[in-house]
Length: 119
Image (cartoon, rainbow, N blue to C red; front, side, top):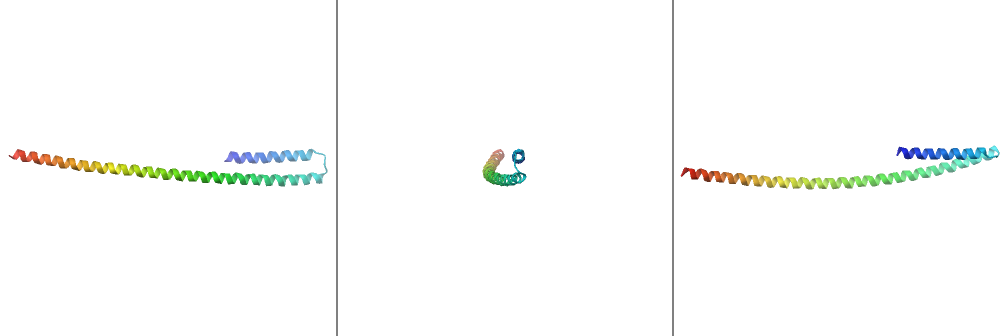
């Protein structure tokens, strides 16, 4: 952004210097030259303002689009993380059920073995 700003300042300064040089080097009366310089600087100032306004508007549009894209990406990321969290929780719940079933099975086997040893 800073390079663009410097470019436009340099362009405006170069154009102003070129116009001023051309006007000052032509054989005209002082009053005519001052009038032309005034007119030229007004036109240049107006055009520079219009160009700057266009740059500002485009910059705002680009910033708005970038913000929307960031929000969409963030929303999609949150959704994916939520799905992964749910999948992980489901897997952990399944492991707990499986572990409880295995513990119950081992306890039943141990109980059966203990009863078989008593006979």
